[in-house]
Image 1 (cartoon, rainbow, N blue to C red):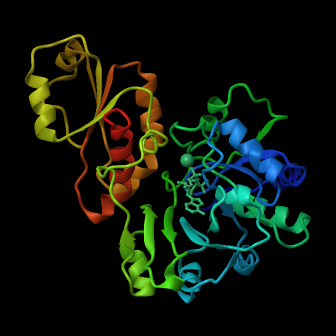
Image 2 (cartoon, helix red, strand yellow):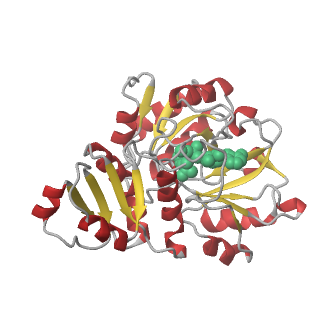
Length: 343
Ligand code: TXA
Ligand code: MG
């Protein structure tokens, strides 16, 4: 991705991180809320600002070429192959945590999530931060949104998510709209040494097939959004405020044939509406067209959810995308968003 990199704010941001402060920065997936991964007080600051439970682990972001051995131990060979193939890029690897890395980044678990983002501003920030730290330096960063809200894909989304924080409390680097638009693929390699195959913890732009093409093994799939989960874990991510429902095109058309009621609905559908704009408006429906390709859909998804939320409707209806591998990550996110209203 090409994006102008202005070094002055990046250097100031890196100094802010070294001083224990928080910096929101762009990545190719979503914006991250960063702190020094080796400073437990700074990490506590992330949890406080996000309102996130302290037992949730955070991903540590590394500059290109950073040494994996500094952060992780017992690294399986396939991890190196995946790093070679996909870093910098939207793939997070879960590995055994090196003993000196604070508990705070992993919510007390003995693992660590590592990723090297490809956005040029993230890379410049991470490189500058590591240089100031004397060589090694990682930035712990969850998505830069309050716990339970939709991830931010622009600097404005970050700003509007933290209205109470001034620039002195939260510095935000603007890197334009995130290219991928949904969070990284997460692959757990922490039990490969004891014979468990890689496990896909979160689908993303890098697909199970992309991974299998490199390591020759298809990762185990984590249970889908319809499977039983610990209550609350679904609500914690990806949901707008307005109730959201997934529907087929047939269901949508059937709903439109029902007598008008007072519910105001906004629809994100792949095809054209069967009724004119005028008739739709009279029924209290607003119809938006969704991109036909999964990558474009993912790129727009969170901004669309925010826009639809802002329309002050009673119900968001998303037409179900195809159940094919290329839509897996999108289906995961919208499935969780819908499950938040139908636990
Ligand atoms: O694309 C992304 O991954 C973005 C950008 C900012 O890099 N980050 C992101 O972070 O989505 P967050 O905190 O919103 O989601 C991180 C996910 C969580 O579901 C967490 O449970 C999982 O990563 N995770 C992090 N470290 C882990 C670990 N050691 N073991 C298991 N899961 C881990
Ligand atoms: Mg998040």
